[in-house]
Length: 229
Image (cartoon, rainbow, N blue to C red; front, top):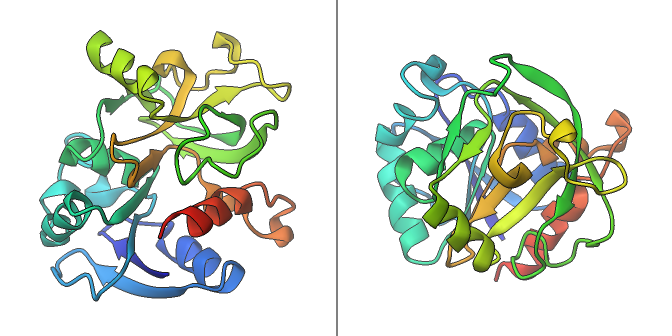
């Protein structure tokens, strides 16, 4: 599979993502610049974490206007795969490719730490091969990660199995005490109804190399590779 990783002004996880996809997962990767419109024939677009345009206005609100995003939206609407991590997730919600919004953390602080995630469904390419009884330790680093949506949208996401991950404790319990940012229903990631666009606040690319003493993120990338055709 051929991946394209987009760099916006302020992206800071683009090289991390490229390293994991190329070196750890053995995939072909194209570097895509935000001012370009050519996706260079990639099958899968990744919007990495960081602080696109300095997070002025709302996080992701300016990045959605970048020329590359018109091509990303067209790619997604045709069934092409897209993953947004952290700021990338924010860009996807701002662009309308994913439901809801990412608001300021409920404690109004930037949070950088390891959290535990549990797969919320097994019917998406990103979660299909994950162990539903296992918790995955993945880092977060964000100030605006509180997932919010209307009651109607929340019901649709839950009923359709579009929730990818929830914040849990190490034993897998989704409680308010382990919710790092106040996200509704402890949601850490979602996908669209077509199951080809994925967004998550935690950083699996920061948990995919043994040198970092954590490879829990590898299972998420492997599930995507094996189930996105």
